[in-house]
Length: 183
Image 1: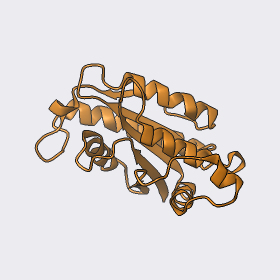
Image 2: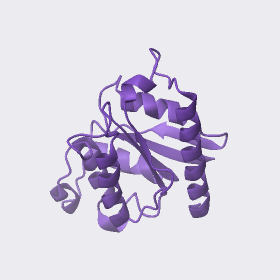
Image 3: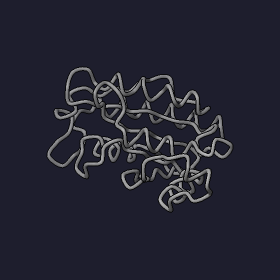
């Protein structure tokens, strides 16, 4: 069984991003266990807490959950042409102390979305930058930018376009292949 940490870059409980994540989690085959790991309760990263050996309990819990996973799926909206602060904070919390980063060598997949036409391109590419530094191999193809997300979800939060579902399945398949290479 491969555990997949799913980090959602939006805190809204009914966000489009959360709905996309829920749809994609259903596409993983048997033997893969995607689990949303909450990031909204993580205190802002402050290295003093680690230096003084008194990290907040939320950091410790988060770090342990991610360590138990074989890979990480990031699903994020685009905020101001970049990633949301809550997602960057989670990345920073998991990266410290640097000698014990929870991210090192964990395969990653990125899905970005936007209610507009630009489709989260900025968020997707900005997220790739810290992942390179953190030594996380990332699915390169297909890149997933979901534009006009409001039109791709029905009233129940399900993706209503078969072509999009098929495309997301090719992404999941590529992610599974990447995970297999690092397991």
